[in-house]
Image (tube, rainbow, N blue to C red; front, side, top):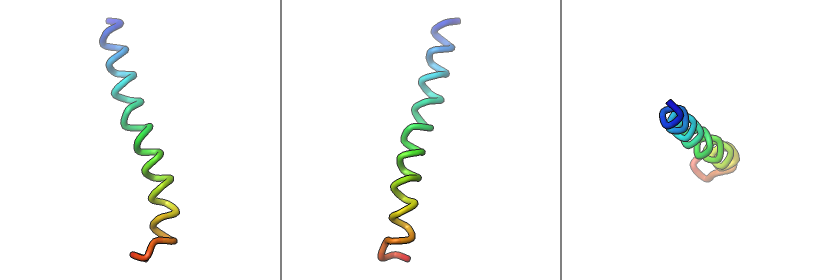
Length: 36
């Protein structure tokens, strides 16, 4: 059971980490980007 919990925690933290960083980077890039 510990292995499953560890896997779930890692999988849940992995997408959240990069997603938050990507959103923070895309946030300023979209409005200030040349695409806008």
